[in-house]
Amino acid sequence: MLTIGCHLSSSKGFLAMGKTASSIGADTFAFFTRNPRGGAAKAIDPEDAANLQAWMESHAFGTLVAHAPYTLNCCSDKQHARSFAREAMADDLRRMEFTPHSYYNFHPGSHVKQGVEAGVAMIADVLNDVLAPDQTTTVLLETMAGKGTEVGRSFEELASIIERVELSDRMGVCFDTCHVHDAGYDIVNDLDGVLEEFDRVVGLDRLKAVHINDSKNPCGARKDRHETIGAGFIGIEAFGRIVSHPALRDLPFILETPNDLAGYGREIELLREAASC
Image (cartoon, rainbow, N blue to C red; front, side):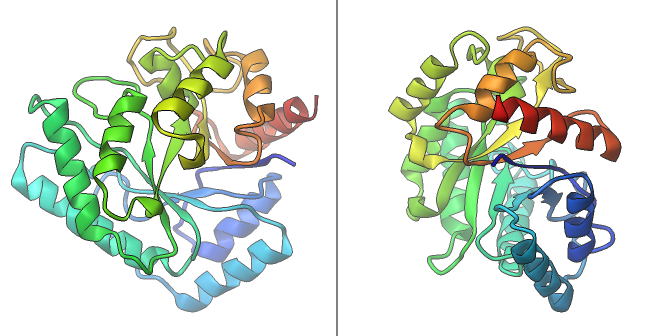
């Protein structure tokens, strides 16, 4: 059965997120590890985290997909920004052990005209500093749309980062459908070909989660504008192929569409139906 959820607010704690997810038919969810537009992180209540684990076990949840703050940029041209990224990520990975065996997804960053090669090196440098051999969390590089100076637009860029990481067994990729589409990969007409290319360049064993979003823009636009499922340029027929594809169907899917909670519930139902067709 399709494992699917959406981003949820962590303001009321871990167990509240689990219950909210169940209320809309979800069996996984994503949450920000700290303020997505800042640096503050809420103190963790170990009992609340344990209660979530019990809820997940009793409700057959899949793997959680946490998200780093948007402000994290491992390859900024400013030293203080890179230092914040390193410190925040190290702290996040310690905190992630309260929800063990989860995924921690982050945007690789923007090289700010320093060049892709320099950006790749700086991102890998941060990862080599923060990854620990005993952590249970797998860190995911997110596929990016390629706007501005984003690193991670191509599968080759993601592979270059992973190749430089010493503890590469702790690394994976989150496949964002809007981003991949906007980056120029034709997942509408050639999903098999795109995934074959991913396998050749990165390896399908690295593919751990999917951000499932439609796009407001045509393929290759490099815009990164998410749309509700079926209302954009990817379209519901393509999503039917995505959620049922053998390389993807067993992964956790996370909705990041412009929606409220009820809207996410409708999209979850829609995609479950598409997966069963």
